[in-house]
Length: 290
Ligand code: NAD
Image (cartoon, rainbow, N blue to C red; front, top):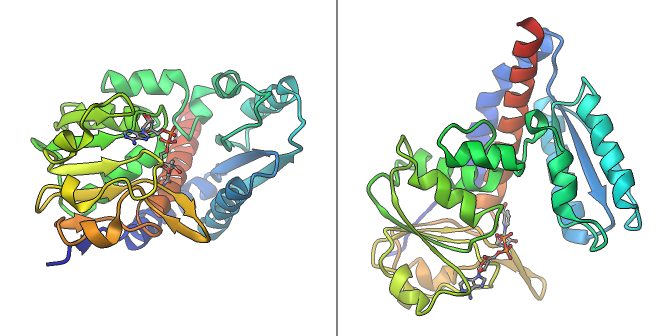
């Protein structure tokens, strides 16, 4: 029997639809949500992501400005731009598209983004709040994974969740979210990585298996428990095809639910970014009215 599809396109459309009245209210109050997108260099994948984000803002009535800088931009100049955006009242969210060119230290730049405008949720302040169970802005991809599961009534509560990948933007924050005592979490979480020996021993124990390792089709059917829920975060170019970290065709015969690539976690990530931007604007309005 073939698995049911976790449709990120449809689910993200629902999330975005629910944002519309909040955006309308904020705009009415003179606080239209605004986002600044900063792109350094001309990485083709980053250009596509940035264009998608801009298009989504436009459709939702979120104000957006783009700053496209040459790959040779000095780090200090980028930080100066971030500092200016921190002061800009029209801007509630600052997105610095990663990866940055090698001469720029990503961390240094991200640390300069005001935590109140950190709609990507990468600032250590926001990651710390997440860790202690009092989050403000959740990182968008992990939040998108959690939201996708919840909207299919697949609560991680009490489940064995195995995450393959330990990056600071996906694996680690997702593990931190799902381990919290609370709604949509309360799972027993294992995190696997390149230091894990015998990966399939872990993946086969998963009720919910989340692949975020950037390794095309690493997860094969023999690594998946019958009836498991499989979420594929990976986006990999193989020739002219985009594939995930899961061997979709094989694994869909073993899993009960599976997210496709494209059309799974990718659209959810953008929807959650919009949700964070709206939240940032709501917080700004609250501060103004306080
Ligand atoms: P990353 O390269 O920073 O981290 C990958 C992690 O996977 C590492 O922690 C590494 O230890 C682990 N890993 C790699 N190969 C492994 C293996 N063979 N066995 C076990 N562990 C292994 O990547 P990232 O930024 O976390 O992204 C992961 C994937 O998700 C990439 O394909 C990326 O393009 C994709 N991604 C998608 C979205 C989205 O919106 N859908 C967002 C961010 C990243």
